[in-house]
Length: 518
Image (cartoon, rainbow, N blue to C red; front, side):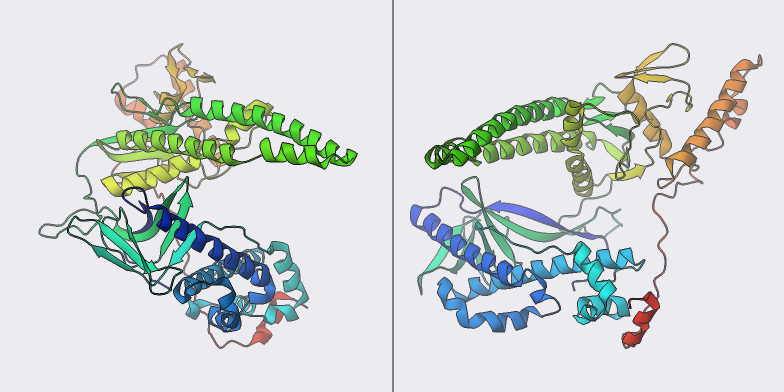
């Protein structure tokens, strides 16, 4: 297993195969290779996608399948690369099942061989078949796999070379013996990792991994590594509220308080289009099913061939994802252009609503691309050297940002304070998120019920002060809020890691009786 290097992250990059249009012979050659590799991939999943590959090394599976590799008419290197990649995927699914079973039993999954316990060693081998209760749990989380992917080519042994025009050429053996495929690419430099060629929207993409360093403070006289962004020493501290209408609502006082304004409009239009389209497709499918019952199979075939295809649907889906990605990353770059630190709310847990939502609202919320926004924040902050802090999201939209109390009312995009002042609800939430970053009483992983108790106490003190006819000084005002942001009281944003004890590798399997497996 590859060890992680400190201050280094592994990212996936995409390049294009062919700086210009690939000639017809090379394109057909790549298409034929991908089709034959798709047949190989499908056969491996059909044969070893069940428990047949559990606890068996990929080299042993290679010995079993090598005598029949000639039927695919593929070069040995392409055949080996796809075989090992598919077996690794099957073993990865098995590891996910083992992790779920161990979590169900209250155990933690270990990645390093020396720290694996008896339970994990039993599940990774075939010994668990002798324990009925373990079999029940594995069957609960295990699903047999199949695949129909036929547009990928895995390359492990290949050659990349940079010519005099700074163009990286990719070379590997084709289907004809002694004839090498030489293809220009948009790779920035020569690479030495596994490549995955994927046919998408009529062009071949090269997916490869590279290691970049996280942004750190540059020491005097120490050069920055490749892909490393220098940590900023000056800039604004901004709180952002991630929304559906726009990508970000910021707490900064400049004119750009809302970034990515077309975010919600595009998602809503796409959701409405999908709904109307699926209703029509379901009606046509019903007509085709009734035609089959009547015995008119010709009509059903015409409907499925001309009206129930997925080509236009997939093209529209790819276009929609591309537009959303452009809006999100553009807004994120604008957000972090002059910022040294950005605070955003943690939305990993589901927020349950007491009132049932309407169907249209459910569709819009389910299509909210907040996962892409979280990914953009992580990627862009690593590149530009901006610090991001995730804070507790409890009641950030219900607080009055001027006083930090639950004394206002939110209705749609308007937030009305107790004194009648009307503010925008999103910018008010962004100001609360910025204040929450320094709130030491409400850490990131506190339950919303505990956070509500603290906020109600502060609100009660504030209301008592409003009823007292005394002059409020700054010192008395600060005494109402016990959790004042300060440099000497940083918020604990990350949970403390529990120390894991090492387990003896030679432990006896009789210890399994501790789990009462029968």
